[in-house]
Length: 301
Image (cartoon, rainbow, N blue to C red; front, side, top):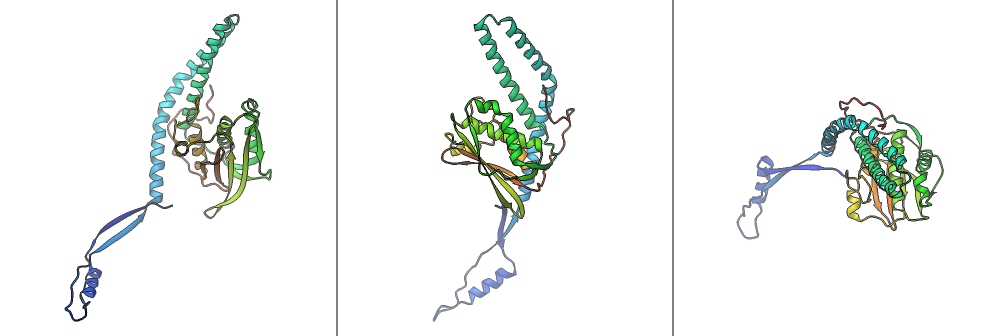
């Protein structure tokens, strides 16, 4: 789809006069010439698709820069506080190990602490500029590795992964970013799935314009999402999960788009299907650098 800005104004030039004279010469049978006014409108369409996209990316970069500056200060001030509170919780748990009711309270505090830490890390990751190191990546191997890394979550529901093919599918993609994307999508699929359910992975070769690409479809068979929720799924901080931060899908889409690909959600029956379209040779979008003292790709605690 293209975005076009139209400009229109009355046209009173030479062509308008010629057109008027032609109409003036029209004579009804047995009558006199009937002059008619023929107003003309000059319309000029300007394709602003690329301009609109550039403006959108600029606004996003400026917004992320503001968030990044705020989070850089929080990171510096909060890291030691998180470490101290974690140490105090661990010590308190040992001191209260013979008091089950008190231990349960400490565990509740620990879960709240972990949730806050998770939110903090996701916001920091969302604010951090994307740094990419694309390399040939086997998508099957990357998905297998991510699936192994989240095995603990899988074991709680006995969910299996079903493949449409195990043939090698390779694109140029940052390996670290690929695991982040797949982890977010698989986590969402696991969360939506019921006990002893299946997550389906399908691959197909596609063309994106004049470039070759690969489509990856990750489908769960859960209760699905409303069309309204799907339309807002990639908005930062929007979530339908009780303990979600609302940043996972936003981060995933940002990483995919940085490689020139797309990430969308489709309502299927039953469940939801995440659709990734990746270019074999990506057209990278590099965000402008922002001033920061932290140049690491991982944010440790």
